[in-house]
Length: 225
Image (cartoon, rainbow, N blue to C red; front, side, top):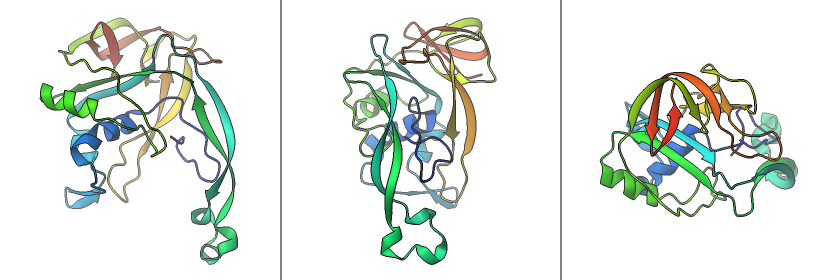
């Protein structure tokens, strides 16, 4: 998954952003469907679930260690050429530094707070096959569905949250994620998030926050605001 505003140089996102998690969950319902009608426009099938999911967040599993590298990859770059060059074959490809998060044997933990029926949420969760690009294949090893309890105040979380939430400064990395952008032609918002991980290598950490709206799910806390 590329960071916002990436073009020829493709830095990688530290973790799958909320919009990617919504897209991954929608795949089980819309497999083979490239676009749907949304409010008089056309957009990604993920738009059908956007309003049904209150929170989508991810973190590294406690035993996971990850690092960031950039490979040299031959990519199509014609969209980034001047209009007069885009049809010329010699400007079609180029060498592109492409970021990746490497974590051999690593695992992610995802949380969705949603008003979807329990059976549908469980089925869609098991149907997740990739996160982000088609090369981002994943295998789901377990799904738990339960009740989310709304909480607030001084809490601790291992999941990323918007950086404007009051939080303790420490082992937190700041990243920009896209939010929205499911409709064709409508620009997504770039929003800064705080990710509770050590700097290098990446290991999950727990950070103190003062939340206005958060949810306790399976003994853990995800923060909305």
